[in-house]
Image (cartoon, rainbow, N blue to C red; front, top):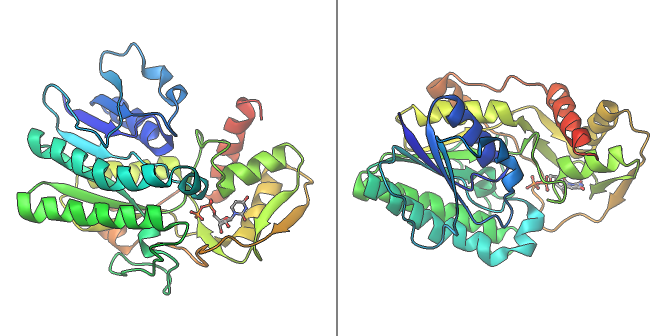
Length: 311
Ligand code: UDP
């Protein structure tokens, strides 16, 4: 039986990865300090002998007894609201946390995967963004704490690969959504879905012409699973390339919820990327992977989940 450590396993993406690993017969140890993670995301695994949860700040020394085959470093607050609430923790988990997770992988001779982000491209000047694009990042802006931490994390991961020969992977996630997103994380999916369900106005920041490409979480985790089995050390974009303006996304939320909410414009956020869409060529070629869930289908499942939580 394979054994995996998942840092941030109580979070949105982390907990979906844990579900997949357990479903594939992998034994899982989750390390999470729960600042943005939620144990409710994992409660269905408690009592399973293949699952263990340790409340642990991964910026501290990590000790995990026994063999480990994979370390998935998925811990980090990840929404723009979190960057304001937890700027130092974001920097620490990307820098110190990545170092500790790499150290654990090296000690165990385990394969390592870094959850990186499209934010390494900053406010990109080219579109779609291929992995070879170096980005356009403001290091001292409101997103700098996350962008620079993840850029440092990628550099550290590559250094462990080239210097220590560690078997590493870097996945760059684009906007991902689905069940278990935090209602209060401030991102556009929970914000707009929550507002639509509560019959409040939908808040659009700026002119709403900025774009994002929303990937449904099950597709994204399939990409992660395939990348874990590939031998490739450079970054791989995993996301959807169905690019939408935020105004168009708001319309999709109104249609999917049947809400009659109005749309209300708010001031634009500083350094808000104007466009974001992955070039998925590498993932297609390397993993034979492409997202398959339409935005409409994914929104329907996400909305059903928020409704089941009483929203
Ligand atoms: N956004 C919005 N209304 C909201 C929340 C977000 O118009 O209530 C916009 C935000 O300005 C950004 C996009 O939606 O352009 C996606 O924001 P999110 O916070 O989900 O993540 P980002 O992709 O910016 O990291």
